[in-house]
Length: 84
Image (cartoon, rainbow, N blue to C red; front, side, top):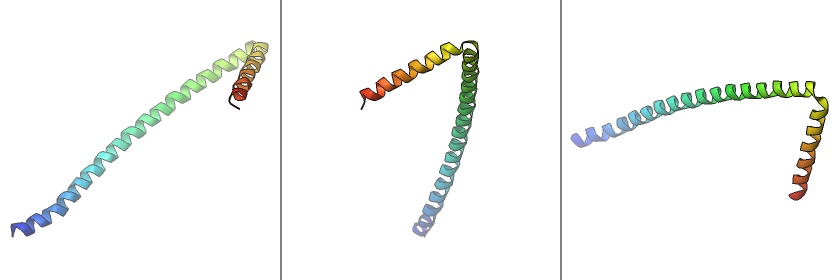
């Protein structure tokens, strides 16, 4: 009799373990989602701030901005040729 009862307890224990694992994975997923959302919001803020600062520099000194863009393009072309 105990063998039959133990045999019935195994699937029930497995189900219980599976449900517990699913709850744990669900909580972990919620935490990861919250962290990703927080990271996205912080990144959005940093990019927005950088964009505003860059816009101010371009408005205050357009010649410097054009020269900087030329320099970056020149360096990018040099690097691209080096890896050709």
